[in-house]
Amino acid sequence: MQKIKVLTYNIHKGFSTGNRSYALKNIKKSIQVVHADLVFLQEVIGHHDDHANHMKDWPNSSQFEYLADQTWKHYAYGKNALYSEGHHGNAILSKYPIHFFENEDVSFSKIERRGILHAEIKHENNTLHAFCIHLGLFENDRMKQILKLCTRISKMVPSDASLIIAGDFNDWRQSASTVLKEKLNLQEAFVDITGKHANTFPSWFPCLSLDRVYYRNLKCTAVNVLKADLWRKQSDHLPILAEFEFPEKQTP
Image 1 (cartoon, rainbow, N blue to C red):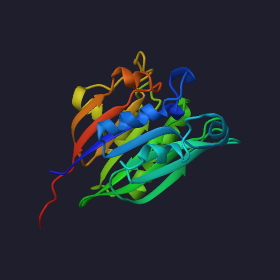
Image 2: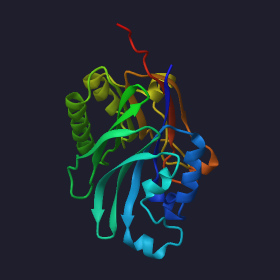
Image 3: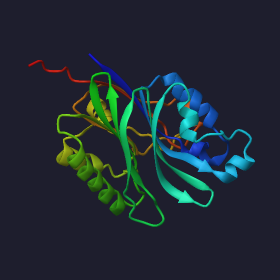
């Protein structure tokens, strides 16, 4: 049985809660220890002139390239928020080849720039469609973004293909799961295993269920919120780790 391990993490642009310290080096060590095959990252800085010029530990490459290093040889980045100093967005790090990726702009406000990062990954003899998202803070925008996501998946992902959607849904009302179940027949990993969504925010006292892992045509075998002290100190979100099995191929 072929398996895949997935981590989703809003890294808060590499800064600890309240921007008290720069935590990217510790984040890199932490995600390497988990040994995930796929890492879904939100709030990843692709470039920032001011930080690069004034911060001693700022990497010479983008944050996603720095985090990927030799562990994840394949990666995709979706540039969402652009500003005078640089840009940030979502990223997918993969141990397996990425055959295709595209970032779709789903912004509905000049204040918030959001995107859907879609990557097609070759996992041994399986094809996996991976979507990394960070939805808006306003509920009306979020619902529009979820419907955009549904439309894209309906058009571009075969109904029998394996699919994972992971990221920060900002969905404290927990309304996204109903829509994704009804329109796409998706399951949420934590709900499937435990019966309820995981509390991941804020990291020092997690009481809101913002981070999710949805899937289709896979079997979820394990899911956990990583709650150790090191995770609480690195970002304002806690990461979710989930493990899946691919369905067995049917012989003719």
